Image (cartoon, rainbow, N blue to C red; front, side):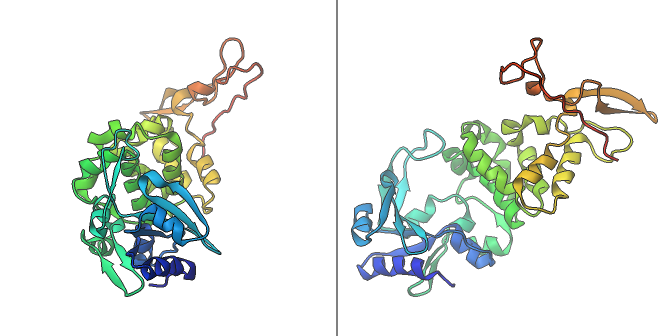
Length: 325
């Protein structure tokens, strides 16, 4: 595996002082797949203070959880002490951690088998106790251990499963996917900022509809984007092949640019139709089309005093939908 020089330097400094140093997580997964790697994480049995003593430029980004960021000439490398996680009461981070001397302990706490691989670039050794390489070959997303346990610990992990499947072109193992609906209460506690990050990565994937459909079928989409979900199964007029929901998804897929802002514009371009629809009969069938007030979602409609959702005075632009033909 071709590891950047600065990352190798961090590993060699640690190993040169007698510590274990393994490259772990998504970087190893992407190297095996052949995808570009954006950042590298190193796991070690060195304690955070040991790491800060060994390197001139460090940032104590997460000492409570054993993480120190080492600043090199061209990049930054997160170095984290092997650990076992305690209870996740906030569905985000463990309340406490216990430092360990074992890379196997550290891999056991991770989310998916494809992220549970460790590589030592000094001698080429690889540790893969959960069959991550086999799942990469099979293009499968599978949790390490019981999926309910993994999703209960961190409510973002179900979103990550859908995002990884969309990004990598993988499928989610049925046992893993079927566990998500029972963990929606945990997923609902995740901050909007963290959900947004995963959703934008789905929008930037080759076929965004793949990830969005996974979000819908497991129940996650309704937690943060019910306005999009509302169009599912709502037929349009005779000029449309798809219902409102799939019409928006296909429009998003059709955008050649990976600029998430343009793709979001396509995804949301007819999102208001459901809220302004009226039932009409065309050629013997019922369908939905915008009414005369325009397709505004409820939050954008002006109130009786002419104020918009923000409460500020002033006119609110009436965004009408058109029938795409």
